Length: 119
Image 1 (cartoon, rainbow, N blue to C red):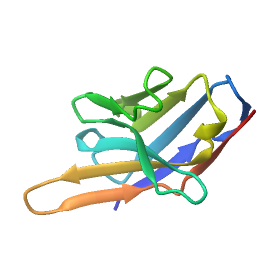
Image 2: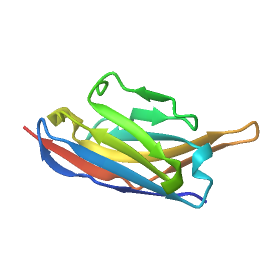
Image 3: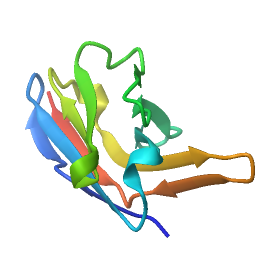
Image 4: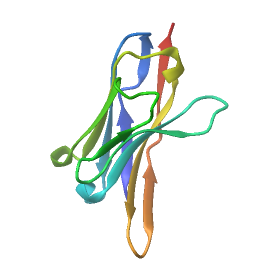
């Protein structure tokens, strides 16, 4: 079983920055693709950024150039650096760990952390 715990959410003014962290335990962290998702009230959960086990990254168009995802396999942690925050970035942010094999898909979620950006 994989446990994911997010840290770093909070209230910030527009234009400010926050850094989210997600600590993983209970697995070989380095083999998982890690992602950050967010869900705003009344909206579907959406992918914000992902990073594969080899370090390849992808971003939602809405955050490209403002957010940076990274991982430290020695610390079993994935980060999301969020700069130039906008009110529309307000959401609950979730950490995800995923691994696809020929036998099964392993998919784990953290409990979420609230990010609120005031205008």
